[in-house]
Image (tube, rainbow, N blue to C red; front, side, top):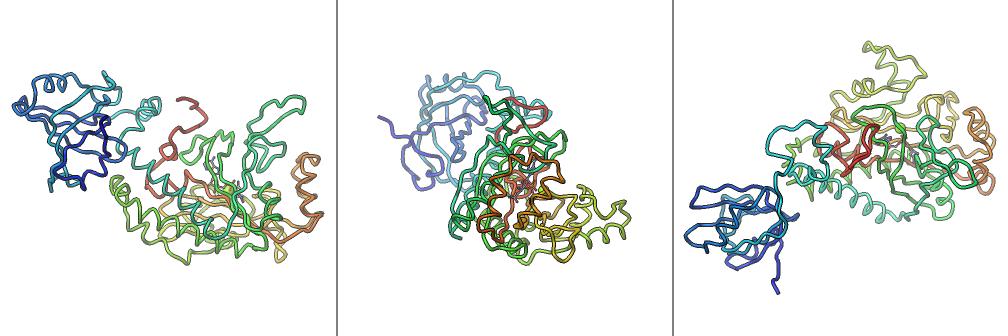
Length: 432
Ligand code: 4AD
Ligand code: MG
């Protein structure tokens, strides 16, 4: 039986004869010598075939291979300082495992629609591989951080009976005899219940919003991590977000530098992400925007152009805190110092990447929460259990949601969320 090796291990195998399995990234031949770039998910290596040093049959097989065909290659590992990984393969054998004729994605400019239509194949490109690896690191960093900080993961339901964020962006589905179920917009209400059991908890899963906007920042299905902490107030909440984001950035820089380089990311921008982050109240933000010619009135939510203006010239993220009640969700705690506002924050990333985190202290007063549910016209009967949390041992608590795709897009320095997830879901895209 052949023992196949991984391309990433080749530098330690110099001089040895090895067998590899993978897909053909590129192939070119001068007629006497052929260069086949093989990719196996762990790396890429150039396999060099010299016509008069190999069997004729091998040379003939080479000629029939298409771009992205699956093959196995045998040869001797040779150190070559010019090669990106420091090694090449002096190849002697090749075997076709899975043919590929007329691979749709060619080394030329394709439109984004075409690429998205072929997302299942586009994923094999170097750029997409780098993005997926950064995404994986972001997710690992999230889990490691929370684990080290003593958080317990609590999985929350995707099919829900209560509206978590806003009625405007719900996906609905019929649910047997019980009427309408909604796909979760957030797991927050459930982690609030779990925080009263376990103290520091988080949920991490896909969330759904029927966003009719076609912006580069919105998906209809995205992944969100939502930590929730008993006894944290809004300031503690921001301090936690700051440490959390710094840790994620550090991990990406430490473990995925090569991928960031492959993406031409300006790494110095990420190296500048250090505490303390900037902080500005919503009211200060509106004053600043008005002084800089924006049309905004106190009371309305900040738009993407407002956010961009606020972070201009900043190297670190900006917390905007204490928004007007009317601009935010029903569950946020009324600010005792200014009841027109709620104890909440958005975290805006630098370089115009916009809101990466939304967080708040939660309303812990039963009657005020009930009043907010009524004001928003939410179906009171669905929130009985949520109100119970304020009836049986209510407690100060805060939490936030960090959007994985927004974070990955920022880390990678790419333009659009659609490349930050393997199979993006948007208003006009349900396949592949
Ligand atoms: O600000 P949001 O709506 O907050 C919540 O859902 C709270 N329940 C979180 C909490 O306090 N536990 O969303 C949080 C984050 C945003 O900052 C953004 O990063 C991301 O989720 N997000 C989206 N990402 C991609 N596509 C969308 N349509 C998104 N909507 C929100
Ligand atoms: Mg938000």
